[in-house]
Figure (cartoon, rainbow, N blue to C red):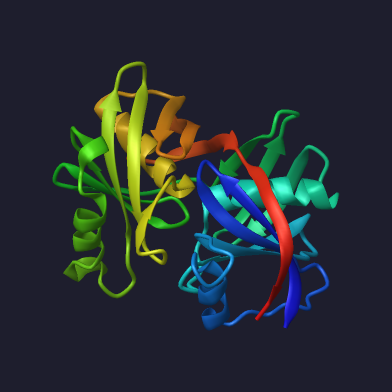
Length: 257
């Protein structure tokens, strides 16, 4: 099977995007894994198919590098940029994804404003948090995140008994001055640290509100800077959540599997 692809990155989180509006591309988990391999494939954190959707502008089919599915915030921002290139949106878009309907806006400078679904539950685990922002995220606050052993400690939590089967993403967060946090994330499905994680920085920003930070929160990652806006409801509920940041095309090509 041979097909055309586009490579995008969103604050260092990189993706292979395929225009599948014709419905002609179906990928196995093994094919996805090979495509994402950084030595024997294109190399990416995930694969995104843009599919037709009768009730929205398009449907985002997102796969982690191991072939598992979830919502990907950064991937969704990259998909919006790709959809704009394809001409299936004009500044604003409504699309469906793994966790339901989303809306997004694209400005003239390549910044995507992505509306996330409401968060109706935030579990406190001692000093830590468990928040589902389309994907489940474990959030831990600490100092010295820059030099922290993210892969070792993240993997230990991800494969601990409560999360061994379904998995969980693990975020290590440091609060800094100016309503700002620094986040590093160990992602399930990738099973490694990524340069940024959109649903992860969203979960981290919401958790930071319990430490006194208000909206909007500036989020620093190893891949760049994002902003998270939100409104707070009762009993740990959040609504009008927006993930805001850039996404760019890197290159395009043809791949034969």
